[in-house]
Image 1 (spheres, rainbow, N blue to C red):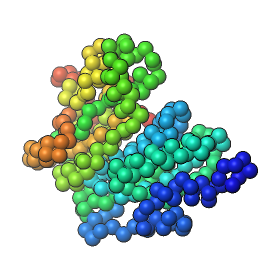
Image 2: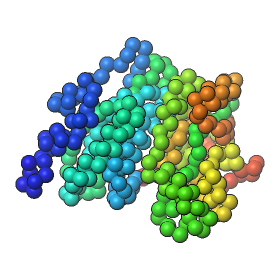
Image 3: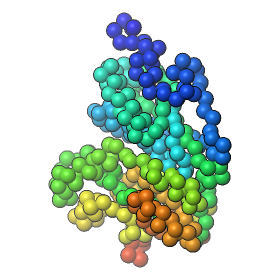
Image 4: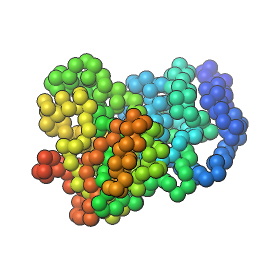
Length: 333
């Protein structure tokens, strides 16, 4: 124990994190490294993302929700790469005022998502920081060999699809920052809560993973804004794209917000935290892709096409008219 009565690093790991390390390769977190042997015919897919207090979540957010968001944003990346999640590494930089109650709730959130998504903790690190709180997750999964859709493989003529609805989280953040906004948009309490929940706790589209591995030529998750992430895919593949804002799927609360305030559409197209999947599909396979999605109850919507490259990479239209956006995506730098 430390002098203030809280556990030291070894005690903290033993009390809070060892119960999450249920896979044999994690060796109960008693070693400096873990091991994992993928099944024959599969390759390992790895991804890492960090979340920082005051940037990706509010410091006052419930610790279990913070934990689940940190894990889920990484599971979203795996889904976009056609990978089934297996496990993760966790690094957490705790501020000086951390409490055992906070950490217990944080680990309860991880335990709940481990059960829901079939993953386990394989290791990581715990450190102290003067602030802000930082959580970094490195997740890994498995995908059939040769079937990991890269950003670099989009080809002119392919159709662009997204899962779910776009912009809910970005609108939820705006509501969080401006308590009068939901009323100005004419949203009910339930509608506002839907948008707020989409920001607080993303839903990784793991059902999409198998479809991405089978049908997608290129895919990625949408974390920094639909228009901007599409631009990243286009740059990586050296192609262009036309994005039809009129086709972008909206939830009922988001559609109501746009109806009351047309400027909300720009937030929807460029705001972050969607964690939906963007995919490029060969046109001759599009009907089969849509049917396969329907059979697993996954909403997918065509929102545009891949074109030959052009300056600017992405042209956004609505009702056939150009739509000018101040920026395409959220950027950290």
